[in-house]
Image 1 (tube, rainbow, N blue to C red):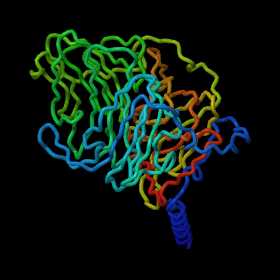
Image 2: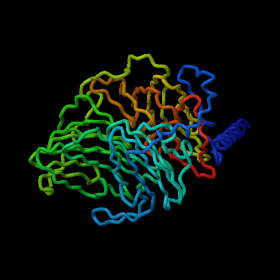
Image 3: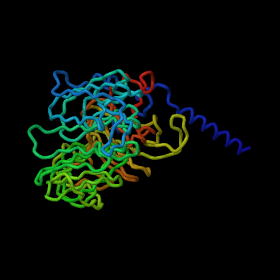
Image 4: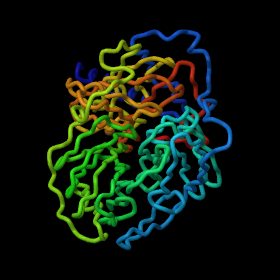
Length: 477
Ligand code: C2O
Ligand code: CU
């Protein structure tokens, strides 16, 4: 009797959990999330301002630079001759490298020729105004075949960024809808300045469009800046042989006083960027991407096969470079403090049973929404209570890393937009809420994001008129 009753209760609970987990055909990201005020009540008036996120547009006026990016399916020939049926911007892979100067008003027209699932462009790492963030179902509708959309923003940061679709991201980014975006400081620059965009296309590792070794002819004495971009879902490890080098920037923010290192492994988060600087020596230099066979060789005549560098100990950015003043630090008084803890637990995700990702115990869409007010100084503790690696990416802001596993950052200030939180580790980060909007905060293993490792940071009173799912078929992940 008791056993039958227990079974009935268990079945009833399961049925309820299943029923309750199903996502409706159409929903607003505002409706499901569990609001978290970070320990400080939000003023009533702010909550009722009703500022639509798509009113927070970039500046008007004549653009300094205009680009057109046309999303289209294309057969792309890699350097080995292999052909991949990819999704591309302008038929090229990666998409065209966009290079602008600090201060430029940038205007980009996105056209969709034939990508059936729709497309958007997100400016990864560029803290653009809220309406220009390119997230389907949050800041705009996905652009359907035949449609177009125009983005405008002022390039205020200097560094290495990238752009990619934020519609069905897990599928469309993997298939090729990404490219590098470089914002250069004003003035002229000598030397070689080279994006190294690492991706896996149809199972084939590539740097830029080379499925092998990309070679450059570089006169000795040249200042070289390698702009490493990881557009994959997992971290990549880089080794450099032939010259000492330094990490000049992380995620588009310069480090202070970075020292020369040799034989150190650089582990780059999915979605993250490192700028690596070196002075070209007489002998060749090799940048190797571990476990892929791809890389870059620099030599004075463009030939040569320098040895593959050995993998050394990982460079630790908590103690790299020289400290410098920051607008806030670990001793600041924070207006709001949040915890974002990732775990894995049994449950239902959109009606599917299995082991699911959870944020603070809740399975998507019952995940927290961090509520902030403009001007707040915000602290977030990122905790990974799972066995997976989660490159946590916050849109619209840069996070100052305060500590890693309790160890304070004692080197250069370290600003990040995509921070690899390793299994069972913890980071404390802080940011100034100075960019009103409705911002995604998600795992940049886009597979994980599609499985529910997605949440938002919302400014009180900012709303979205867009819906996920629905007639526009918006699917940001
Ligand atoms: Cu690189 Cu939410 O994106
Ligand atoms: Cu993840």
